[in-house]
Length: 174
Image 1 (cartoon, one colour):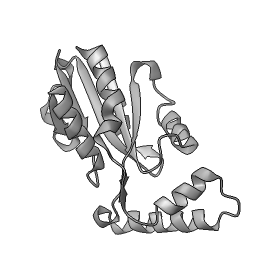
Image 2 (cartoon, rainbow, N blue to C red):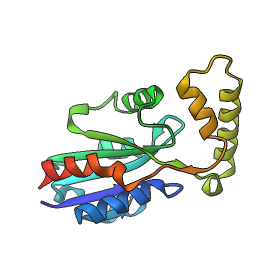
Image 3 (cartoon, one colour):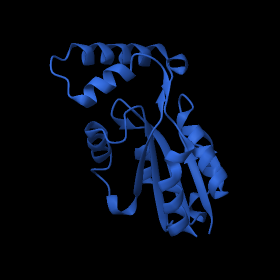
Image 4 (tube, helix red, strand yellow):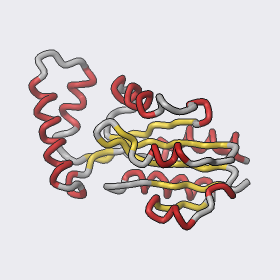
């Protein structure tokens, strides 16, 4: 079975997860910017790894538009929010609402925020988001947690977060 990981990363978290996954599965790992040089149709399994920005999974429309004959299509999404966050669930659903969801196995992994690698627009947007969360009169546990998280850079990415992805890939791809 031939497997490939295509990843789209801005601040390095998704790239790190993609490289860890590559080490575990022993497959090719290609940055999204270089994907034009690859014949994705020649792979049995295609894993697309990307990140959430302002409620959108980056480059997902491109991936969903590919006519892949791959038996297994896995989407690995990273973001700052905890995995059990209701907003994260809604964001994932919204991003896949116009496609045949049963064709894709989707995994969400918490990663982090790195203000040092963000452009000024993203830093400003996060500062506004942080202030908005602080001003909410009634915060549930998730909003309190997010308000505390987004104030500074943090890294919650861990190799062990990939275990369900690895197990799924090994069961369905080999």
